[in-house]
Image (cartoon, chains in turn red, purple):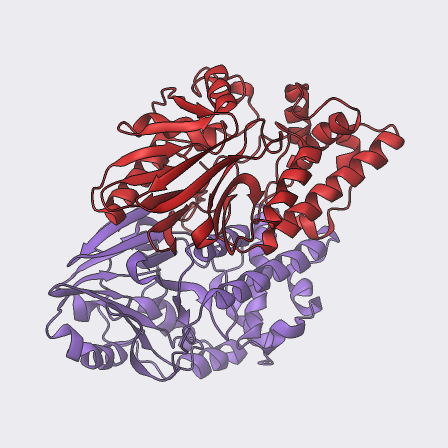
Length: 318
Length: 313
């Protein structure tokens, strides 16, 4: 009775969740490669946003959702949690916003360039994506440690995590009086954490430091809104990667060989499991004294991720 | 969430979303849905015969008198979701393109032919389909089609259609009302009964389950069975993954589909109604693994389902 060979490959539509009065998470299923979460905080007369999306279409949909919820109040501030394109490609569509981020986030965006010229995007690592007409729009108000943003009376602490972790420039947005945390890509919920561009050991420190905040509601960089239990889950994965790296270094096998022989156990349910190869490249560097966030051969790591994925480009549904 | 009783009739789920439930959810006993907006409403599916559909339309009248049905969405091309269309023919009837194509070959004649069969398959077909009256039905197909997704404005209520097939059939649309977080899943969900993959691939059905889970719905109305939530979607996904795994393993060992369906021990899934549908699901897995596997016609599929459920010559 089959009448079609058409097989869709797309994700469920994004959703807005009010995680606290006036504080919204914008959750994009399925949270896999280049499909991130964002957020926004609505004040009496203006809106502050956390992160853009990876493509023009997804960012336009985000702006439409903000407009629906905020009734046309302008987005006057945009904070980037880090420089990766899935969180910053759409910056240029926030035309009336002051774009705020860590100093190295600005450097990272400028070094990377738009997807059309980006070596990373053009590396053939991922399946093709319709990015739209992305123009580079880096943060133009930067900090090196932290900055405090007020939306009316609501205090939002924008805090650099102090060490390379997921990237070299991760910041979190912590709203103390609501116990709400926008964790950026320090935390993935349902997806495999990704440390290639930062430091596994640094991430252990940065993620463990989140515990002391006492957050009740966490908006991860990818995946559904969750509670503080996600912190232990991510820490368990980071420990797993470091253990594999120690064993792999001792056995003098490559990161890819270590990844291939690993038993993922409970982590096999996480999406994008091929990230393990990239994570092991970084963990090897960390444990060999390269220093957190040191430049390593990312192209080799990405190639190993493709190998671990059976030689196929990594599926990107952005 | 509050539990919606599984009783025949109209159940209001939210301000604008209702379900018309038809126990017991086995062969042909399907659910429909109603979404209302300012001065109009959208009907999700009609029922298997004219009498059932008339009864439903009468039951919906308290709502539709002031909110007439202007739009009908047929989730897929099995008769229990569209044979009543002629009774709502004044409305625009929307279906996914592959569904509209399948409707042409899926009319009442197929069932009338099945009922006339001799032997065990005929007795089985009469056992499950005798309660329905397939005479006098004027097949009334869709008047508007869409390929992948379509957004509708039903008197101010936003309604999103997503074709997530092929899976159960060649086109399987779900109806999502985002403001009410209510999902009408059609036969991508059987709750309490066994899913059946007429079209496949089952891997795409698993992916459709993930799509539905990602919607984060509060109310999920299946094509058959009681109103559910994420747990119901997970249950269908688990069954499909189980069959996929078990059948693929037997395919790798060179077992025939018919031997495989007899060899698989269903375990907890054996408690679902219509466990014999395993026969078709095994075929769907084999077709996906090896497109060269010989296709089995519908009559033979029913013979195998009947045999698994104890209807032998």
